[in-house]
Length: 218
Ligand SMILES: *[C@@H]1O[C@H](CO)[C@@H](O)[C@H](O)[C@H]1NC(C)=O
Ligand SMILES: *[C@@H]1O[C@H](CO)[C@@H](O)[C@H](O)[C@H]1NC(C)=O
Ligand SMILES: *[C@@H]1O[C@H](CO)[C@@H](O)[C@H](O)[C@H]1NC(C)=O
Image (cartoon, rainbow, N blue to C red):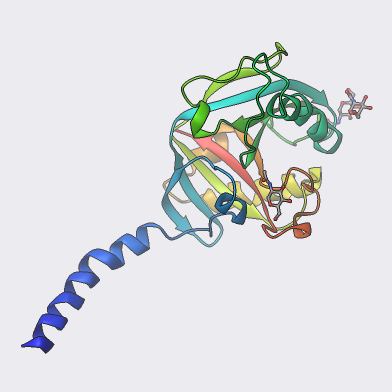
């Protein structure tokens, strides 16, 4: 009797638990997300080379558009104003808890990641999702993200240097070919994602050990 009850339970677990586990497969969540708030997303498909995420719409803040010939010098400039804003440069003089990751939109990113504008976006913690402290800088703007339903994501274990980003994107677009998501490859809405704002060019410095390149699509 006990035995068959156990068998029945195992069968139920197989039916319900296993599919749930399969559904949540994908890249390991970033380690930073156990200490700071990260934007929630659902993995709707994953394979070795990439995963497809659906981010929940939420409030973010965007910084100034930085024009440069390279991501490397643009990045610190892109996050400068946002760091100051989170650090208390707002009308209410409140410190906003740091979140991760940073989304850096690269536009346009048609052939290469160079010679474009870079815009950093910070996720707003839950506490301020219904209203952010008033920015002192007109360059800080609240934005609802994501603008697209899905993101195809490739995790890269090297730093955010132009060549590495370009190679990561090229590999992502190539691996999307022949999948139901290949339209993402031609859409060219590119975002570079870093969980390590103080070492984007050396992800090995801290425990996350990776960055991500992402293309949006509907
Ligand atoms: C790129 O950024 C660097 C460092 O801030 C700056 O010296 C350079 O003038 C910028 N280049 C362009 C084209 O804006
Ligand atoms: C970027 O723009 C500069 C100045 O217009 C040009 O000299 C350079 O070749 C461009 N680089 C790329 C990769 O397009
Ligand atoms: C992520 O974690 C690393 C340590 O592993 C830390 O240096 C970094 O500041 C964290 N990032 C954020 C946004 O908290």
